[in-house]
Image 1: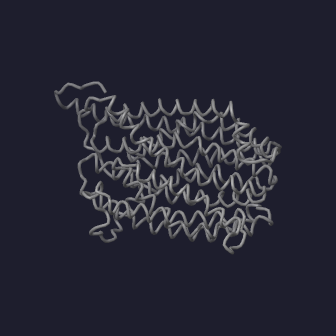
Image 2: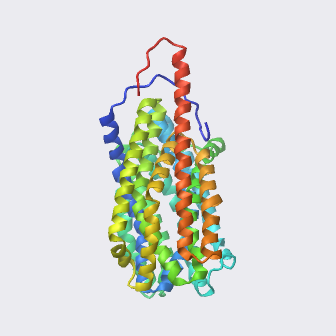
Image 3: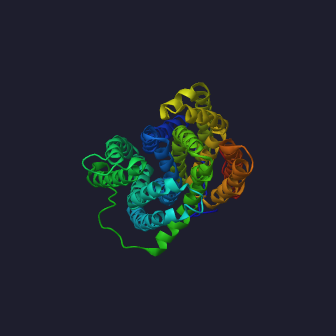
Length: 474
């Protein structure tokens, strides 16, 4: 099994309690959804506040985020390995292993955070290669240099988040994320407008504000996990284990494909701001608004995918294959419903939505037209994230990584560049490439999941064939 850290000892399926699985999935999903919406709100607030200042400030944020977001999500994506590992240990009844797993992941998180800091410090060196307009480069560089200081906080926080969510307690992260979202607004305002004698930084000030709030959120979460009675039986900060290179290597081997898969997808969207920047600030601003809107809508299926990773991981640890298969089917039903709802909202209210971001009528009209492309790929996006979430719960991470590499960088990115830069289709051409790439990813990941299910039940059938016990239908 690709990316697996354990080889399952297959047993007979346990009858599925459908009502229990629906209730459990919702219990996991809704706090994660609020958390994801709150975290997406950071980018939303940056975009709105910068857009209210000027198209130039919005373009600075778009360029800075275009380079920062792929790096931060790759690093945090690697730390998602905490979730299936802790969920599997819980499902298998091996709670004593959870502190050790989490502590080793925290060591890895610190290393990844420092690496992310270094990458972002060097990122402005790519501006000339990417044809970023000269007048945007100083503020975009400041944005990246500032936000880089928050990278260790991002990876450490992602590890602690994965730990508590995998235990079935996502609400603490939800509360802290909401508080962080409320805190970023005054911090942004202070640095953007130069209050209390500070220099007026415009959109570049969002970098300092974001890095600051990331450290605050990490400290608050760590204190809560240390003091709350809920976590007293699994104490991850007491009797801290020594660094174990073999274990951290295994965690990285599981998490790196997750991070790469997220990087391939997110970078496809965010790098578009860099590719489109020679076409002018109006085009870049319209793209950034459309991207921000779709990111908010994407939070629902993304949260479902994370909930599926947790629940599938627990059932994988229990070796309850029938329940696991039912949860996966349920996940696709939920994903389809969410996508259809998002499509309807975009179709009916796209002009009102883009008008919330900017008062510039030219930018608003361009962004509104791009939302039509976003509407088209909602189903594909929901299906691919549900399939990826299920596969991660089964600790299959390398297969999805190669699928996303092919779909996003092998097909969508070059096609988008050709249509937007070499042919006269502009931003619409790049978004056409996005639609095609996401559709291919959804198809291939769904086939991958079906193949993994078939493998499990083939092994199960082989075990049953060697016994005389009757098989219950899943």
